[in-house]
Length: 297
Image (cartoon, rainbow, N blue to C red; front, side, top):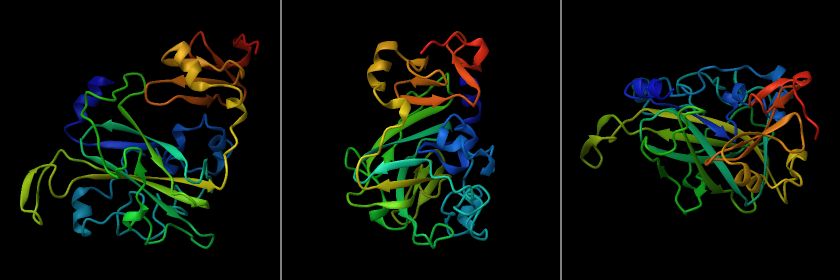
């Protein structure tokens, strides 16, 4: 995997929004109960790390505009990756947050091209068939990271690499606006790469990362409520951070649920689920037929 990443890094930069789950990446989240339960409604996209506005040249031809969620700007709406489009018509809203809470934002970069990340939030009304043109356009739509900034220059390739999961994984915490609630909001991830030579004519600067660069996007559907979010059953009574601190990095059986397992890493700790009918087999660190698993919880 390391060799593969090194080979393609000089050609294409690619990445995907993993948390909250981008609607175009549900194929990678079938161990998430909220998504797996609606699998029959999902159109799966298998190049979900390439939502790049039709390519840099095409984006420039459109005045450097992009669709709201990474489609080419000149496609008819709703575009494929947008709410109501080919990959956004499942109706799934897999994450619920509390108003004003701090949330985890995780991205997997599969080919590193430097640059920066931004995240924006848009509230959808019940009459919106897709993201309105006004979505993600205002400075106040930007989510604020835990250090008070809205734009993050991502580290180089020496930080965040994961030889097990592949690529580079980056997690930042951001705070949702206090007092905002919505039955349906959309979080947009924007990745503006920075490894091509270009010129910023407005400021009369030329160099690596200046001017027009390749961009990637992803959109995730969330609900924001007033009050605390009830923990899933698999997390009640379990301190995941303490558990992972005790067992160390890796994939481990859930101490209370045969069908679940816990992924502990330096980037994020997650409770995941096997497909229906399967249990987690700690001998092979994978989901397996229940008859093959000795689970006594």
